[in-house]
Image 1: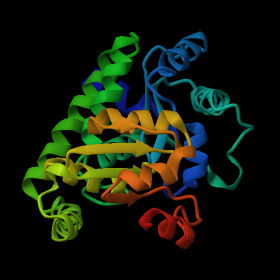
Image 2 (image 1 turned 180 degrees about the vertical axis):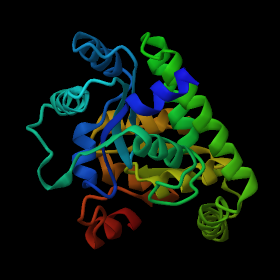
Image 3 (image 1 turned 135 degrees about the horizontal axis):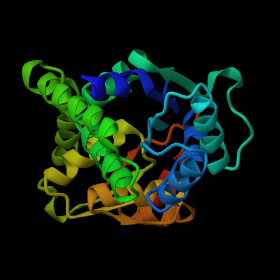
Image 4 (image 1 turned 120 degrees about the horizontal axis):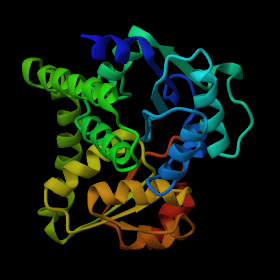
Length: 273
């Protein structure tokens, strides 16, 4: 009981998500697997001995079990510094959660209740991956482990006892159906995923499950492309080669969130020729 109380009362979460920030901001804040050990080392230098970093297309955040009043400021400074940015708290780009509110947030994220696409099925695996990175760096103590195990249990109950997963599955299935209506069996087709938005990832997973032969990922930020490619067992291509990649792709999924068109009419006309 004492362990649970400490984990609840001392939990601090600082981050940016699809509600508080733009995708461009999250791209700059993104912490890839190679950068995580350095982030953890910085947290330890500031006295934080239990912590976890999570970075996906829709959220970048740091967690800590630390009851000190200054813990939230430390997390914010480390997160912003890791991206080489100035303080981004103005305008609400970064949020801060403490105690029970932070615990509810962790549970909601694990259960895919906090996602841009409610019910998307991959966030739990992403959280477990982040947890393993923390363990590998010696940052996952007993309180953090207990908190995450409870979040996993809650997420599995939500998935098994409700219909939360039906909507994203149907959207992805519809996209696969369109691709199959044009190309027939996808086992000889190639797919191109442009960007790392959550809906794009869901469609890409469905295409992979449908047997698409080749899958390539590109993103203006190479670390983003590499992270998504690992989860999809896909190849990575330079974003500068977008037009060339279009010429060899049978199915293209764009999910970049830049606020501007990725493909224009001229680019498609040249590709079709």
